[in-house]
Image (cartoon, rainbow, N blue to C red; front, side, top):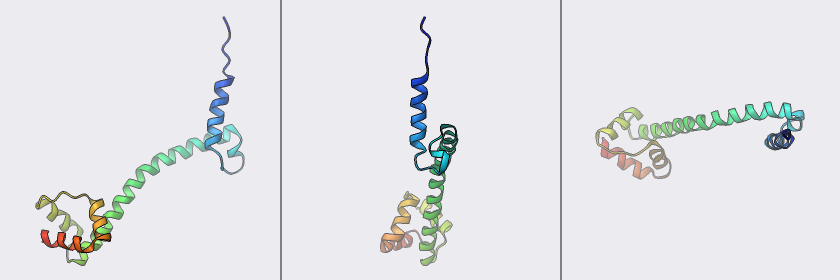
Length: 114
């Protein structure tokens, strides 16, 4: 039986990792062992960052809605509660866009729930 040689697969794996590590500082960009550690850490940071971005954007939308609602004499929580009581289903992203780009439309929405 022929013996199995793994050189080809190892070479492919090394090339893949080193391609991801392109642009890293010093040995991290051209030594596999260092590059592999850096790439694994980077990928975990990227995964976490995708989750954090959603959290940050929601915070931004809520801040914008709160600022726009307070201009019209309503706090954020009272405004959202009034929307729910009036069965107006519009998400925070769209409310935020309205507050920034369409202040008149947002004002009519606030007046309708007051």
